[in-house]
Length: 67
Image (cartoon, rainbow, N blue to C red; front, side, top):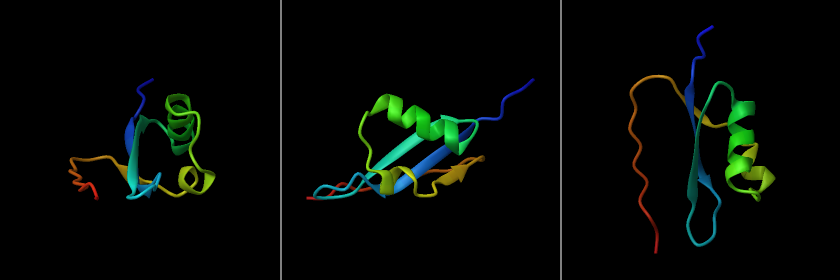
């Protein structure tokens, strides 16, 4: 059975002085959240449970740093 992977993107998260961004490639948003927590053991719940952008086609993102 073929798995359809998607790119899940959370923008405006992990804010300190400026906002960060989180990405995960997974088959579901639930799996994406698990992968993020495996990568980083602390992610604020209000960031983790935001609805991410879901990318299934060609797409580019640009995020400038602050400071």
